[in-house]
Image (tube, rainbow, N blue to C red; front, side):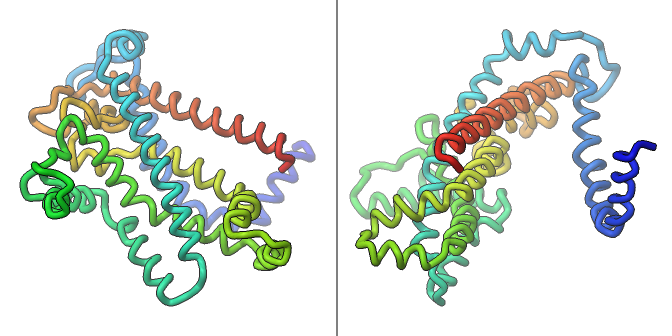
Length: 309
């Protein structure tokens, strides 16, 4: 055995307790994540609908993705609209809330708990709450807006025109508390001495925010943006409960479409069960997300070199 290999085995032996503690999680990850993915991907070159024999079709599933499936590419566009809307609204709101509530006081602790509550709720419960709030005829949102005199007639929040906006609002409500906590953790890590020095130098609130707080928070912000980007691309549970991807596919995002290919979500669904094609679409979707993530990391690395971080 080479010296390098011997060192590796010595390290494994010395840290055997840590590896044994990780073993249950590794087994669960392999059984419930890796195996299902490999099981699905093996059918990407087959026409398989979950029953009967799998018919080998070669690259036809991938040709179909790129040339004969406008529904998938509509879902890609919907996904980018959804992700963009969610990030543009969620992260600034979460940062502002964190900035206001970062000081350790009793009222701030209560406020943080209230804002964080939707994060620990299930996606199904959140979607049902929004269905009741945004219902066209009996929803409290329409009643409130009519009471204020903002609207004269009920708005169909789950209709073609407003469904995506409603879904984005739901995502913001459900996610802002989580990112607020991340921002608070970053803000509390900034030394108070820095702010005191800035105050002595005559810096006002805006100057302190943009020249001290945000630059010092940049590493945390990059991590939060990366996390939010990946999670947002994979969102589907609340959309599935609230709209089932409708109306007319206006809220049908990539992973919801993939889920429909494996498990049609309603009797009236226009998507049929196709395991083989679903596996091919899954791989294309994973490549799209990987490309976006890689581009983000590349740009982030270049910016770090420019700023000297």
